[in-house]
Amino acid sequence: MRYRFLFILLTLSLSACSFNAELVTPPPLPTLSSTSTPNSILATATSTPMSVMELPTETPPPFPTFTPTTTVQSPPINLGVAPITFDANGTYRDVVDTLSAGTSKTYSVSALKRQVMSISVLQNIADEQWAHIPMRIVGEDDLVLCPGDCTFWRGVLPSTTTYYITLFPLQNIRNFTMRVAINPIGVATQSFQFVSADGTASFSYPDDFAPVRVSGLPVYKTQPEQVLKYIDTQAYTGTNLFGAYFMFGSSSDAKTVETCTQPASLGGPETIWGDVTITGIKFTRSEAVGIATGNIYEQVFHRVAVDGVCYEITFLTHYGNMGAYSPELKVTEFDRPALLKRFESILSTIVIK
Image (cartoon, rainbow, N blue to C red; front, side, top):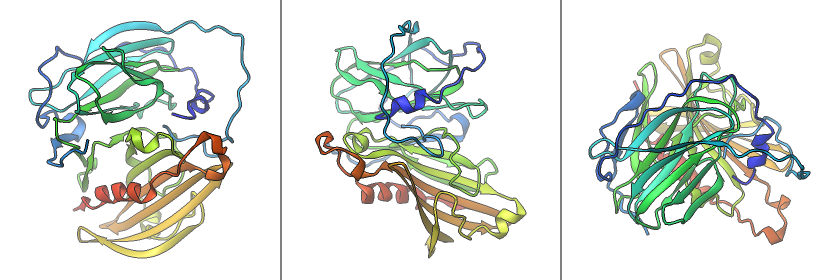
């Protein structure tokens, strides 16, 4: 969020697309587990009691300065308000839609005070270019949750009201999926299930992670089939954390399988730390750190070859060098042990057949 202008520099025009929205009429507020199962993703509310940005280019620029411009841009054309609905007893909805550059669209959803809500966007993998999609989130009571510079949001809702989520993409985005999850009162998280396309691997993840598309930074051996971004807004606010990602990928390429557990040094010099056993599977764990103009990229890899397939799980954390911040900014170091614990909670559920 802090460097939203970096992504503006990346935007390119795509061809115009037809409008396609998947929306229905509003039911009562969600209270239990969702029965909706889009694209092999299942949601179930856990019993955990509640206590009351996208990757940049491979060599990101330093902290930027901007020259004011006299060009006056027209405000985006608003396409109206569309209500977001849940299935009976549902706790989330994946809304599929298409928007063109120069337009905006608002989605409305009602929720109760103290419920946990999360909003995230997964862009269509088939699109040629990753796009920056800012969002604004405001309550009907005029309480602003996000002023317009978010790319995700998750937190405890401050009031019982209708919330309005406005997306205003900087280029055309086709068939994107916006996930809106609202947990029952008293429930801190709900969980989702991922199953690989070939059905050989699965894991579950909590709703403080969400499926996203990344810009393709080559810090992994396999092409990630699933990328989850850590979307706990509080963990980013006022800290040096830019992005944290859990990536799962696999490959049956003979050379990749043969060298599966060997270090690759893709994002920085990689060091093997040894073997770890998770759900009965012995993974080789290694770590690497890459540094570029005040940005630090930490990678933790878990790799294993099973029945001619190399499986790779990557924890990628992108944060700013604390030495690059002026003291008056009062930026604090993000909670790295807590973040690693969240990564490990997903890894501990992996099953490979």
